[in-house]
Length: 188
Image (cartoon, rainbow, N blue to C red; front, side):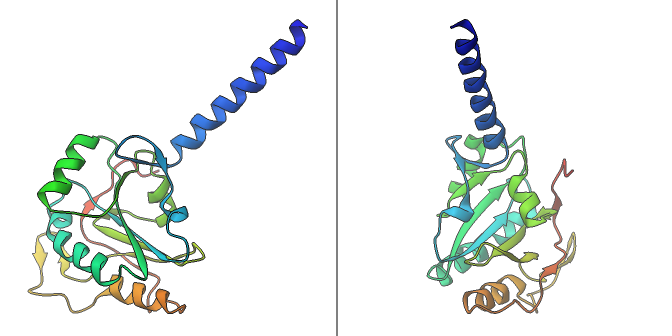
């Protein structure tokens, strides 16, 4: 009897451990619940936009990201992803309010989405097809040549091009373009 109880207890402990490990490899909503944006929008393209509350370049892109989420809302589900382990839900909520964001936001403290997307800086975007294949990752457009040197207006629009192509079932013109912005710390 004691052996059976011990086996049951060990099996339960293993299951609980597996749940905690799995939760650590997922993004979290602002309430702390695990969330996988790639499972949320069946049949739609998924766009993850990596931002930081303290990144001036991310902040500058806020109006454009919101415009794009409205323009492409039928074809694509947009998510803001906050990869900084130190950004608390309260500061993210304040940021969302300050910039009038209506998009769902996720924390990615273990960089599960960063790793799936290949993101290195904020702001940076990742586009996943309706089959959940990563088809584009990189800058939103070429407004910034380098940090501190913006153009008057962008001349290329990589994220828009990727969303439009992917929603039509074709490959984007470019699969990856390096972003300019604030580095995502603790990349492994």
